[in-house]
Image (cartoon, each protein chain N blue to C red):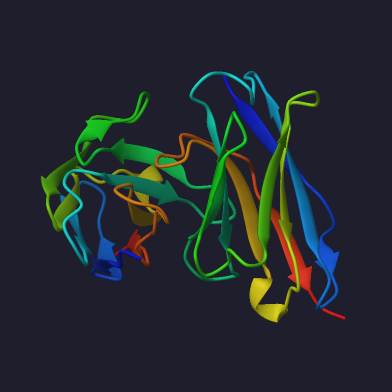
Length: 117
Length: 107
């Protein structure tokens, strides 16, 4: 059973970079055909796809966030990460990591990141 | 980006009711459509993928249908644990956009 857990600061200042890590257990981020995603949900709102990364490191980002997003994978730690630069209050959300690109079948519990000075 | 809409945005139903939620895509997505269930404070849970395939462990009272631009999620007999928000997601082309959600609450 794959398990994912998000970690990182819960509070980020405007214009700074949001950085989150997802630790995977019960599976390997480097397994063939594996894909790993980030999805977010502003408080009281719907789900927004951020992007995903293949086990080999190639990525696909939402066009609306592409200029600010970087997703990377660290096979030595069995983790993948999200960086979102130049954040504003509009980036306040629960951030989820998930297994799968086009179909997220395992999710982390989510972590709330608030952008505020 | 492919835009997804859902109707209704919310509905009230009783235990035992048959519930149908509709999802529409802004262009044809073949059968590349997922359904998720989300309860308050919890991560979404995958229910159905490629329009009609039931995810492992999901009760058979959940079913999905449709292709092209129009899809439905049906709960054949609503149970107390089914009160939640349901989202559709197209998996035809990235970004894999979600619908705005349908909240199912107790009548």
